[in-house]
Image 1 (cartoon, rainbow, N blue to C red):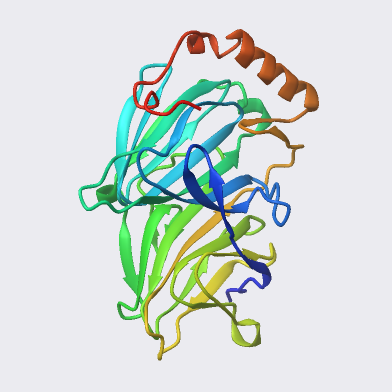
Image 2 (cartoon, rainbow, N blue to C red):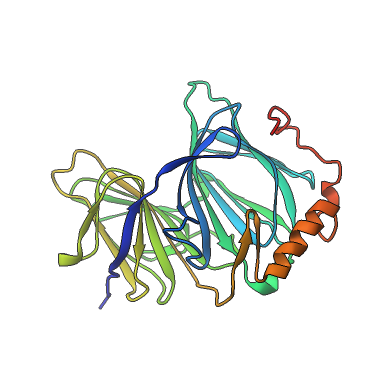
Length: 302
C-alpha cells in the first residue's frame, strides 16, 4: 500500500533580479529553504536579450537547466558550445572548475526565454571530477498519460508508472518530472524512500496531499514534502478553469557539510577559500580561464 507524503511547507517564490538584467523566482537557496540536500538552489528564470548570465565560474556542484520557452546559448572555457530550446535540458557538472556563459537568444515573437535551473550538490568524493555537459532533447523524454489521459507525465529522470527515463544524467541520484493535470485529473507518483522531494508549480491550481491533508496551491510556489512516505499525490478539481502544471523533483540526501560562497560549493571553509584562490590565480582546474572571454557574453559588460 503506497503511503502519500505530507506537505512540510508551501511558499511563494518572490521574483528578484539576478545576473545581468534577468528576473528569477528563487525558492531553494533562500533563508526560507536552504541546503535541502542534495538541492542547493532552484531558480525559475525569465530573461530576454541583452540580459543574461555572462561569464562566471562554478566548482563543486551540478546544474540542471530545463527550458520552458525560447532558446539559450551556452559556451565555456574548454570550447564547448551549444543551444537548448523549449523542452530541452542541459546537465552541467562543474566538478573541479568551469567558467561559462548562458545567454538567451532573441526570439522571433519577442517573448522572453523562460526556464528552471536547479543546482544539485556533488558528493565530496566527486567535487574534483572533470567538468562535463550532457544535453537531453525534448524529443528524447518519455511522456506517458495516466488517469484516462487527464494526467500527462514527462519522465526527465527516474521512473513513473512502469516507464523509465532514457538515461542517468547526473552524478547525484535525482528524479525529475514535468506533470500536467487536466481538470479532474489526479496522479500518485511514487518516489524513493528517504529522498527529499519538492514540487514547483508553474500554472493553474493544484491540490497536493491525500484526503484531509490536501492543500490547494497556485502558481510559482515551492511545495516541500516530508521525507516519510513513498509517493506524492496531486489533483486538479473538476471545475478548474485551467490545467495544473508542476515540476516534481526528488533527490538522494548527501550526508555531508555544505559550505557555499556564490558559485563555489565545498565541504569546508578552507575548501571555499581554496576555490576562490584557484579561480583568481587560474590554477587547479581554472587554468583555461586565463585570458578567456566567451563570445556570447561580450555583449554585456558587468
